[in-house]
Image 1 (tube, one colour):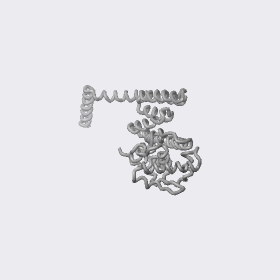
Image 2 (cartoon, helix red, strand yellow):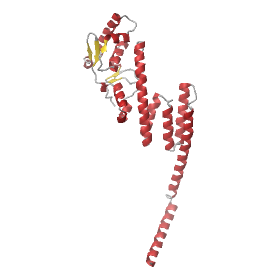
Image 3 (tube, helix red, strand yellow):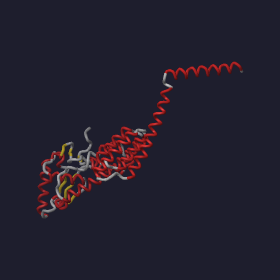
Image 4 (cartoon, one colour):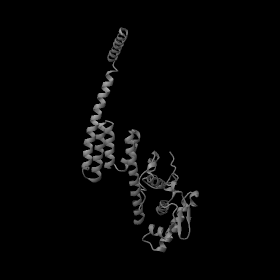
Length: 287
């Protein structure tokens, strides 16, 4: 399915512009400039600030000259319909793109209005913010790291809420889809593990409870080189016990229903109904 976003930053790799990886922009510094403008879309940014962000070790004059060259290369690389979107004065730069056309801002806005979250929200996050973008400078890398952590936590928080909703509604397809999304981000998330164990326990599937627990233990130990929290182990024991009880009761119920589906039992039931009808008829005739 083609993305509705013109600019994608939540890809897990590099930026995408109208579906083109890297936006067709050659050179790390011109792409970094476009990234900063995208993260501040519709904001007017100082050239001095941009120059220092991307070339912190250069003198102010040299950094400003480098910025001019990066902007020139950026404009040369961008498709023609994008060139005019970079509004420039002698002191400022601005990317004139509506924020709903950028995945980063759509996810942020939807998360702030979490009562209106829909399945479409799941498509906003394609991966960590520019996770494979080359190192540019300490300040630029810190900017990306801070935004990356923010948007990841935001997405996980919202998706955990949607996971709870799917569990409450016993929507297995939605639950599995959201569980996979969260596992791709952090397979050692204890909250997600507990929600997942409870979900399968309520459905009476002990093997799935055990599988969730085993996967979580392995991921947690690999991530933190430590045993999982005691609370998770306690929750596992409770959910596994409940799952086994649910499975036993379901099995007994299915067996009971199956008995009345067997031919001899059906025949017996029909014989009983005929005898009961005759008794009622006799009673009516005698009154």
